[in-house]
Length: 472
Image (cartoon, rainbow, N blue to C red; front, side, top):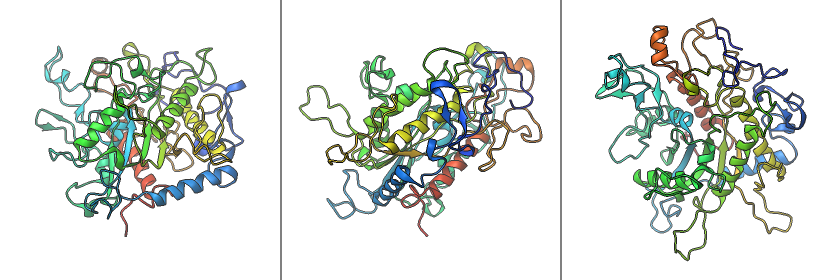
């Protein structure tokens, strides 16, 4: 484990090494590297038996489909028309690249408007007044590009009218450094990177089936107090419209979320039930099929179910950053998604994508076919899906692929006291106990690392580069 840390002995604290197998980042592994044991043994690579690329067999067919779809993504007006049809003009036509998921995704894409413990540290609670924890932003609702109040499409953390002085280099901050000057943008002016992620929206809250959270719990974003399996999608639709866009303009979706408070690992060191990685794969399969078709018609409507995102071409999924700095203190509030679960989420994504490549159901994803069958009857029940940037690395150990690492508070040669996770107030043990960090969500430094990976993905992925980056 990373130096400088002592764990308490619970699964949350990640005290047990990852079994007898060293946790190798999937992107550094190979089709011959294995993790786990028994029926849950997994292949340590991005594409399972295909390794880390889609260069042969059905994987190459899948890759080619992704590049073909990239060439079909063009700016659309709000009704889905292309420029020159139905009065659609180039000024109104957009490509919406929608990001959905939980708090880590939200803060990595947009940044946060307030820092951890801000209210308590201003004397509104029982605590005395302390400075802001600069660079430790919480995930908050994002003022996306096009917001009618003119707010920048990224957040800075404020307490009242006071900015904490820390510029959060989130994805939107990097892509749109000046929202009013398209010459500074990293994407074509027709491309809208849109943050639809929100805090606490784990995978089950994006799953619109009966297995989803909002199928059995009230939707806090709905216009009525009732259960609504599609709760998050209605919220995102409202946010799109508020900013001047529509669901018909969404052509690519990026998903980053996880199970919260997982309890069962692949190697079953902490359990004897179904691994959370498989449950996450099940949620992802349900989400993919929903993204293909269909939203539920209004009550009493005679309309047939229709796709919510009629022009969706591509979906990208990725797993979490390193979670091994979490510990079991503060009543388990730091156990949101610790190790080995953050690492094992990579297998959920891998298995989902490989199932689609092979056009099979491994028993957890369900069918996620993207091609018609041999008779041309089944046109596919899921959108085409592939990896976004793979974000996991083993703590402060730089991964071989590109040197990415994640730092806690160890302050050693590899991590010189610039934590990539929310670490709370490190001034003294008493203040740390009162204003603790969850060591799970990214700090400003961690946000920039994730955002840099996303920028590289947008500018260089063969699936995104044809339509997203600014043209020479």
